[in-house]
Image (cartoon, rainbow over all chains, first blue to last red; front, top):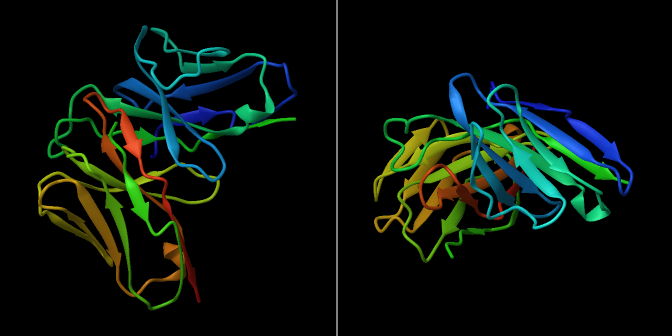
Length: 120
Length: 111
C-alpha cells in the first residue's frame, strides 16, 4: 500500500462539525476509491471516482456525505454535520489506469493507511 | 448481490500450528484477493488468484482458488506471532476495481 497517502490519520470532531478527509493516490493512478470500516465490521465500498468524475457512488449515504476528485489535488471525502455513528476508519485506495497483467478483469487496487474519525 | 463469507471469524492458535481460513460465495468471481490488515493500518494485498484451481504460495502461506471460482482458502503452515492480524478476502464487483470484502478472520498466534 506504499504510495497512497491519506491525511489526517486521526481526526476528532464534535457532533455537528464537518470532517474532511484527503487522499493522494499512487503516482500514475487516476482511479480512487473510498471505503469505510466500522468497528467489528468489514470494509464497505462507498464511492469510486476518476478525475473530475464520480463513477459509482452506490455505497455513499444519501445525506451529509460527498466526495470529489478534482483535476488538480487530492481526492476529498467530506462529511457534514457529523454524528457519532460516523466514527470509523475511512480508507482510500487507488488503481492504475489499466488492468495489471494477471489480475483478471478488474484493476488491482492499493490501499492507504486510513483516516480514523472519532466523533465526540 | 454477491457476498463473501469468511470462516472462522476468530482464530487463536499457538505458534507452530497450521491453520486454514475459508472464503466462500454462491457467486462466481473473476478473481479473488487476500489482504492482511494490522491494527491501525490499511489492508495490504497478499495475493490475487485468477484461474480456477490456481494455487499460489507466499513463503508459509498457500492460497487456493476453487475450481468453480466461487471460493478460496488461505493455509498458513507453522504459524508465527508475526502472522497475527486480520485476514480479508475480496472480490471485484462488476468491473473497475470496486471490491466486495468478506467480514474478515481475526488471527491471533500466541508464542
